[in-house]
Image 1: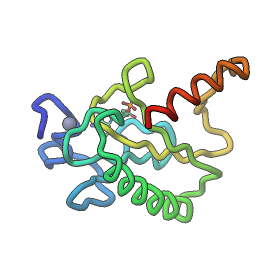
Image 2 (image 1 turned 120 degrees about the horizontal axis):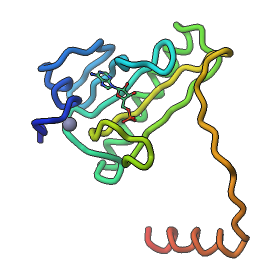
Image 3 (image 1 turned 180 degrees about the horizontal axis):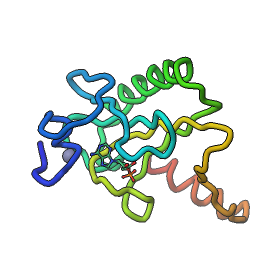
Length: 138
Ligand code: AMP
Ligand code: ZN
């Protein structure tokens, strides 16, 4: 369902402009309007889904299939060294547009993008507990 105040719903429906690279019945692939680097691409589902927590896994699979295809073409066409595939969920994780989107961010030698975090040091026991808890709920 389209959400009235969602800019990506407006882009998906064509009510708002975007530089569209590819579009099919389910997804739109477009350039990020405020790119982190040259060629920064976003892939959005046309139907409003806020985040990964509401996303249908099969649909996410098809989206990632498309992402892989686009990434391989981008690698050939842009002069990039690498790429970050990023997907933020929740404001504490850096999500600013609350309509699911996958970032394809080309990386260049001298770019200014950083995704650094300080590694934590859980005990083996803590790791096991977390792993078991997730595994048991699947
Ligand atoms: P996130 O922080 O993961 O929610 O990413 C939102 C992304 O949407 C940012 O990279 C913005 O630059 C991008 N963005 C915001 N408005 C537009 C727009 N009108 N068209 C394309 N991309 C946009
Ligand atoms: Zn939306």
